[in-house]
Picture 1 (tube, helix red, strand yellow):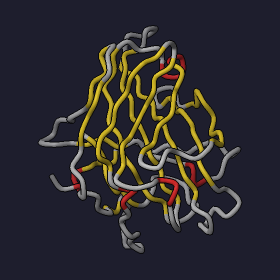
Picture 2 (picture 1 turned 180 degrees about the vertical axis):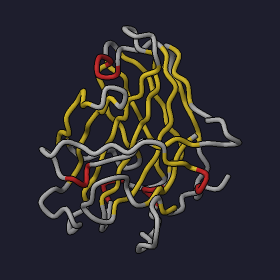
Picture 3 (picture 1 turned 30 degrees about the vertical axis):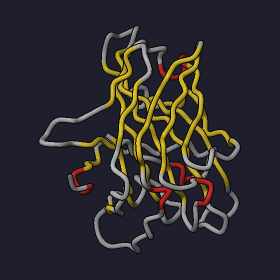
Picture 4 (picture 1 turned 135 degrees about the horizontal axis):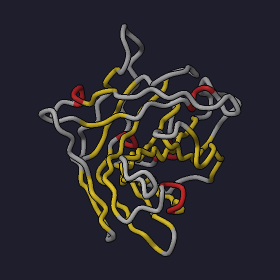
Length: 210
């Protein structure tokens, strides 16, 4: 499947209290017109992705410099398990995400649940931006974590600086209350690159799963 089939769906800009480069756009893989998603159903869930299939796909109109595809852009799989009141989200990578060079790289979980209050579909984006040393965001370096409620258009966790990731994956625990305490949800993951500190969707999609 060509990565170009990965279709833009929503554009959301983050609050001005954080760098504008943290603005993001939830994306969804579409295959034959219907999405293929992972499903967590009150038990550990895993999805897989091929090694070596990362490719820079431009997400805007016009032309722009093409970032080099690195091993840490290549998603190998993802998993989620709940322990106590927290979900442990993992994205397995072909390289070390702490070795990010030149640009802002953003790893994201997209979680689709049913609201326990409205009984309607609810979308959350769990995001982990990494700002490389010497990137256009020279005053904002390292890792950040945030959870955005796309349905309510608000943060449940404001962007917060965190420590480095493990050498071969993105891994972080998220309290269930920040994503509506679901017993079941659908999900997909992706990694994108932003070339400059600009508003709107990141410039390039590099990989996604499933």
